[in-house]
Image (cartoon, rainbow, N blue to C red; front, side):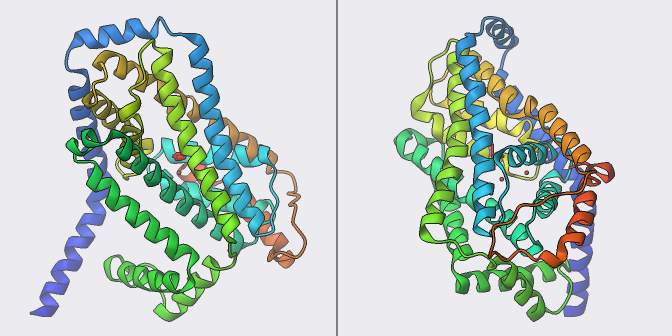
Length: 387
């Protein structure tokens, strides 16, 4: 009897894996349609929105663009600092180009949130990081972004006060914050990390059959890679500050978008709405949270008293900077990296680090393969956030 139930469970999991790639986009489109219906309401509001877009205050528009650019720079600097902890030095300009390219991979294609970290990993390898340091940097970047966003959302919930509780967001944000902090602690504490990796491997093998191999060997391999670099408390604080700067500047772009359309900034609910919107964007429903972010941001801000027409326009303008303009820019960055990758890479290393000089030829081959990812299926924590 138990064998039959196990077979049934396996069959359901196999069916779910087959239909989920299609089902999630159907769900995403349904949610986007529902959000659009809720936030637009009447055709007159869309007409007012189009009028407002034709009467922008261009000084605030420029400042909004600068804030969004600063968000990307902060995220690039965060990754630079993590690589430097692993004794690999990458300049700010190439790191910013990598960040833009990975962001476009995340935001524009299915499975982009999976392929973008792989792309970043291979770009880090090209620039001198060995396999362990590159993998650790990708993981640490994800942890830093995942911890700092709920912190910002929690601050927003405190600022919103009782009004935030009325939207039933405080409990959700508090739970996500505790989960993110636990993940951050697990990442920097070896014992907690070992337990977390062990449980994750067990759960993954039970549900999906991945990763394949003996659990003990896999555990030791993952622990070795995740502990190849140990951050000092000062380094941890510096990384978290850059993570907060990434999200705060992106939220600043949203605030400046309100001023750009001639509307008042709904300060009391802005941080909470932004945090909730970005958390929703990280759900694997649509690339870049398309539709989900616009809907969740607008509904939450209107709930705090924002005028529906001006809120729609401000959110759309914010998404122009944080989503639509970054796509061609990022794919241009990817093309530039692909073109320059034809030449022999010249990685810079900091003496005394864990980078393995004997893997130089393998790094060069892997670097060339990095640019082939989008060719097969071109392909992210948005930015964050980054952005």
